Image (cartoon, rainbow, N blue to C red; front, side, top):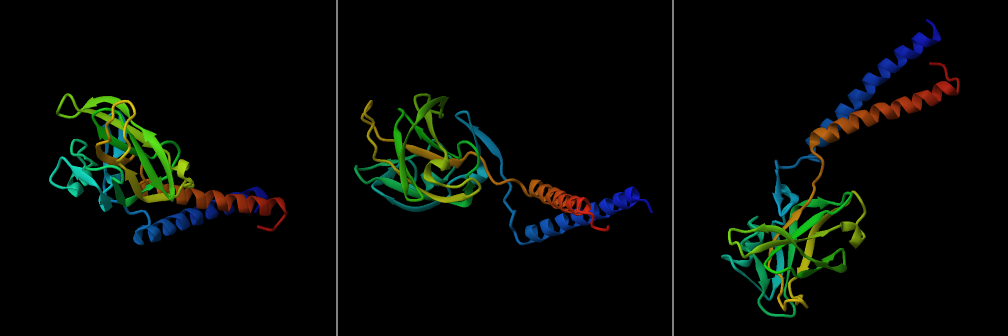
Length: 228
């Protein structure tokens, strides 16, 4: 058999093996729940696309906070930007929130904090570091036309979180007093702007990566004159 035919046959066999390996690895990881994620939907709030699977849904701690809802917990975790939590006394008002589905740090902004009324600022603590974020008016309103929806967006890079790592909890201080209006923020919703890739996308990436890695390895072997 000519060298060209042998090379063609070799790579055909290797391509099938690599694809099979990618399929097998993906199947194992899916079976272990590595990529499993409840169904979610992207919704637009104040011009920001947020994932309904990436909402803060655990109230870990709070102090000196009240709400306009039934309770502090229901107001901040109900997914409704119109129900808010805010400082009952200052200083020392804060909420510490958790995410059942940790938020991925990818390129660009990763988290949105929505509040109502006049633009205010939040002090946010993640990974032991604290930064202030000013909200801005989105131009959207709740059912009450005088309640403007404002937002501040966060990039996890600010807090030393590496790209591809996750954030599972966040502390938000609600006692910042606006120098312009003398008000404090009314926090309505905390949501991830983007989420983990779906299993189908990861499946394709694994299969392709396995195939390409095998090709590179064997091409090097051919160049070195190894007998195929």
